Length: 504
Image (cartoon, rainbow, N blue to C red):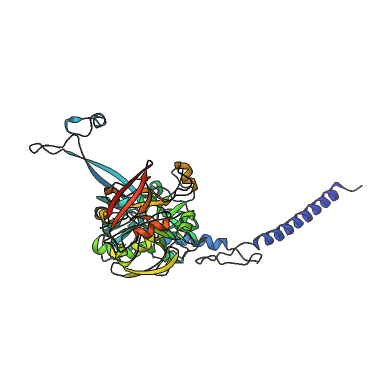
């Protein structure tokens, strides 16, 4: 009979062998798994590798990079608190808000009456910013226009708790950024290095810094999810960087940092059904901002290029009608007859595909490209007209403010947009099987077409007695340069009507 000690010793030896076998199997399995992992080198973009090639993962190095970048850049990031002041007239006689609902707005004061008193309203704005420049005792901070661009009072708080009164140098609502300044003789304030946002690639690591919900000096990490995104709020025209680094309220105006510790974006907005981060945030590429800093410091405003057109994206079906092989580009709906585009030869219906050799992906891309062109510069527009490719050179003008542009709508030609009649339209409107022409989809206010009485839904059948059967016919007629008077026949409620429009 074996002793209990011998049996126990055998069991221990078996268990040890089992553990050694498991450890060896785990080591082999982990080696196989890590052979398909991408190598990330601190301070550099991830290198592309062939699938199946063994590479190493330096997680400690990546962590140390995040730590070092945070230590160096957080002192350059500030919390921005701004106060916007608005004034609103107080109704006379103490009327309640519902008074005008029943009785309509009341007339203003007579010649011997006092003006209505105004009441002042203050709203607090909270955001972030980043220090990007020093000039003597003056430091400059980039933030968002929607944070501080309309503020009368603001101050910035540094990472170490120092607070400074800030002044608004200028802002650009179209790209949603603003420049603040504060003054101090202290020289231990850090300035963030600026990177090149054109060098970004989808998949690059990035850090977002700021004060979400007022929690100052917050750092989140993610990757560049996409580039060239458009469609920002309030008509913003930047080609945004999309990232899954968490961005929340209060992050607006804070920097997006690459793995070299450089600012490559200004965080500005998120899309979310909850109001909080769901991993879809957007930043203004820093290259869209840096070119305007000197203008803001010198003049307080940013100048944009202008060619005098109204543009839109096109559907795949519309691209086919225009004879365009690819839908990438933008159609010229209207031209200002006193603008550079019309004077240079661009006409309604032209489909712009490139500017100075740079491809135009859509409406927002065209607006951005033209806006970045300096006034006085000549630019080459590649376009498609009636299925034919051509190039036109025009001289860019300086863009005026929105009010000045709106006052020029009497120079807008043709002043209305159309779409072709197809089978779906015939069925929807109850038209005859052989009905053709183009139908007005919208008419611009104060344009000659609006003044003449054209309405949305009118079906144009001829211009200057020339039948309009297709979209090509329409643009060929309104693009004529040998005439200024246009007799338009159209159908409205099964009644044929005729009006005359003079192109100014």
